[in-house]
Image (cartoon, rainbow, N blue to C red; front, side):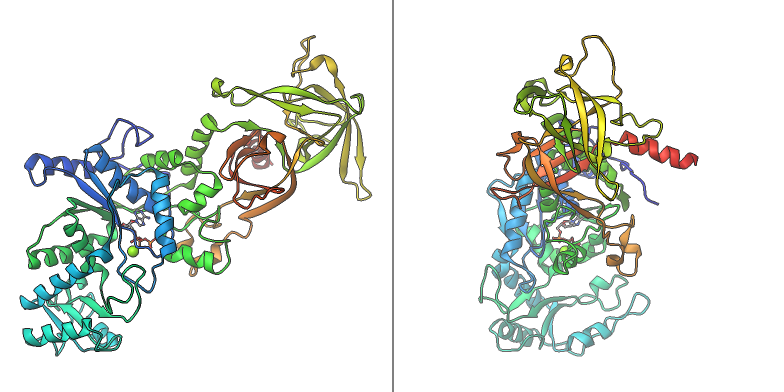
Length: 574
Ligand code: ATP
Ligand code: MG
């Protein structure tokens, strides 16, 4: 079942940056810990692996961890879980730092890297061997898998499990010194090969890997496994509450075992449900191939649910935070409707984005009775929701563009826009009446001729007569040419993972490029990232592909379209 659920214990206010800190189950658990004295402060972290770009699911984890640290006057670390040298890159580290900062989380001076603890982790492993709780195993990776058993069958103990401590210490040191090739040996924790929790069946904690690391270079040729490293990192940093997504629930007993076996500081782990959203996928594992295989232009393609994609598309951090607040924090998985995210960005941009006129599918209009060489500037309101945004001047002249869909030669009932003989208002300008239609040889309407009423300057008739619609327009002579990119859902299916291969649900119509479009000259100096509302069309954002002489804009989200609604209702009635 897919629902735009809002979660059970979610906060009551829309913007989680607000003063009401809510009382989700995590905060309830922390309140309890502070009351009982289990902890006397709060310290959280966001621990991304730098093997891809952050997506909006990560934003949820960032905002839970950061939001809680902030609410409890605690500390928040940004820590890179960089234990796998083969998949990790500096590019990802940089993008993650940028994204977390953009979202609004502040780690102060606590930017941490798991790789800084490699020496400490090695010492901990030696300690485990000395305690008889870890051993060097010579089985191959395949044999280890076979010996592991299944959910219904217990595993089998490795013949190397009983190796004497001294031998283990010697072999482990030689592993570290680079005496053995990749895959020759591993270090395993000695726990329980019959445990019903497969994570506890003597997990591998170190592997040999002669690969340079993006931070430690060639210092190490053995690397800690994620499960071994993860809990240790939290312990080393003094994290009080390790807040993570549900899939780590059955790893918790293993993290507990490591910390108890070593007798070191023990954070409390609490799990929450991952964020899932309709018409997209939220995993680096699935997003990466879309970028690499050319379905989209890259991790930051504006269709991607990555933070860099959403930013490029025109989303604001405020909108994303409001969305996360409304989606809530829950203990069970659910899928949130992407329309909730769209709603949140509309709501924020409605208050903040300046209005601009732009024509996406231009139809030329000549005002026959307007003097050829006359130009004037008309006053336009920048934001009706925000008086302080003021007004601007919009140039008007004899030749204009309007939207093709704002004219119909033979209009059906309820189509109130321009038609032969009909009068409409040009926003901020004049009433105009269509007097002639020019068509191409193929019969397409290519130009309209209108007359204007000079008495209606500013958009009102002194005699009080009314028109049924107001159109946006741009002056052909003054307009800037632009390419406009319209986006639709990345996937046609609500849940693409239901397909055998999720790529089969990729939406080939997810990008539509319109060019040339014409926008009002006030956008001349708009830099990439500049957001505005194109009146009657939606919210748009200047793209980084823009150059000195070519403006490129992304549609962030549409406005609600009343006409489309009516059309839909009519179709239903048919
Ligand atoms: P992915 O599946 O995208 O690779 P991941 O969990 O492997 O995600 P990490 O870099 O390990 O990626 O994630 C860092 C943190 O973000 C983890 O603690 C994880 O719990 C959290 N996280 C990842 N995806 C989501 C999600 N969809 N919703 C909530 N939290 C998430
Ligand atoms: Mg991961």
